[in-house]
Structure formats: structure tokens, C-alpha cells
Image 1 (cartoon, rainbow, N blue to C red):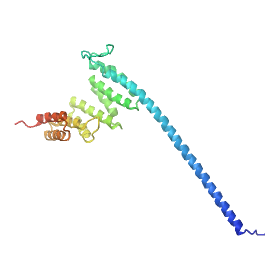
Image 2: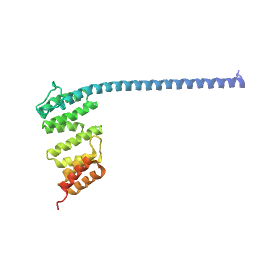
Image 3: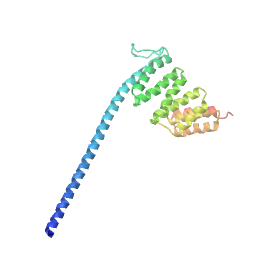
Amino acid sequence: MTEHISRKELKQDKIKETFEHGAEAVYSHSKLATVLVLAVLLIACVYGGWKLYTDRQTAKAQVEFDAAMKVYNARIAGTPEPGADPNEVIYPNESARAQAAIPKFQLVTAQYPNTNPGRFATYYTALCYENMEQVNSALDELKKISGSSDKELAAMAQYQTSVIYTRTGKVDDAIKILRALKDKPTVLVPHPMVLLDLAGLLKQSNPTEAISLYQQVKKDYPDPTISEEADRGLNSVAPKS
């Protein structure tokens, strides 16, 4: 016998079904919202933990780096300083001082390689080797950070490499580096300094470009000290009458 469903009953069933679907939707959305909230909280906790860890590592690295810098900047014998600590360690020469500072910088780099002090310690290790006339070792250290994602640190390493190349007669290599730095100036490797160095290296091989660079420095950087340096460069390269 076929059951007869009244319109009223049918309507009630549809209303019930609508409420059930609505409840399911609310429940599903609630579950999704809960999952999203938990995911955000998890990410926040992970980031917070990572940030706390890196901050602590950086702080520790900075302490060690400061200790290494204290040695790097220590006094050399024969250079008295009024009011200096009588117990301060004094080194006989730059080479001895650099030799004492190297292991301290290397320790910072080894223990805290992913911190700013750790990366800068590599740079100062290179400077120490340079002070000890160990050019190849200095260049090896500079290569480690020349491609750093830190543009300032990379520029410092590249510039110092150009300085070493200039001193060791690799002028063409130095010019190549300085040209690249000229097009990408940074704060720690000032643009006028790069232009002046480049002009100085070009005085013999390309005096016309050297003059142009010195003139650019005078135009763009009117500071008396910089401008006077450019004038000295112009006087040294300009044709004599």
C-alpha cells in the first residue's frame, strides 16, 4: 500500500533536510577553521622558537666577536695611548697581533656560521692574513663571503679582493671587480671610494676614462675631502703643458 505523504509532511522533511545540511556545513567549516587556527599557532610557535634560538646564537656570537676585535685592535708596541689600561696586552707588531686574532675569529665562524658576527669574522680573518702577508690565505677567506646573500658583506669582500689584486700586480682583475662594484654601490663600500680607486688604476691604461671618473666624483660628491682627492687625481693624469 503506497504511503501518502502530505504537502505539510514533505515541507517538514525539506526543512529538516535543510537544517541538517546547514548543520553539516557549519560543522565542516568549524573543523576547517580549527585546523587553520592550529596550523597558524604551530607556525607561530615554530617561528618564535627559531627566532629565539637565532637571537641567542647571535648574542653569543657577538660576545665572541667583540673579544676577537679587542685583540684585532690591540695596541702595537711603541704606540703609547694616554689613559690606557696598564694590564692591556701589547703586541710587538701587526703580524703578531693578527696571528693572535685569527683563531678567535675562526672560532666565531666555526661555532656561529649563520649569524652576522660569524660571517663578519670570516672577513676579519682575511684581513688578519693580509696583515701577515699571507695573500693566498686572505683571498681564500674572502672568496667564502664574496657571493654572500648579504650584499654589504659581499661588497666588502669583493672590494678587499680588489685591494689585494692591486697590491700584487693583478691590476686588470682589480679593475674588473671595481667596475662591478661601481654599478652596484653599497653603504659599507662607498661609491666615491670605488670611483676614485678605479680612476687611479685607469690613469695609465685609459687616462680619458680616468679623467671622466674624477670629474664625476667632483660633480656627484662635493664634500671637500672627496673633491680634493679627485683634484689630486686629475692633476696626476691631466696632460702636462
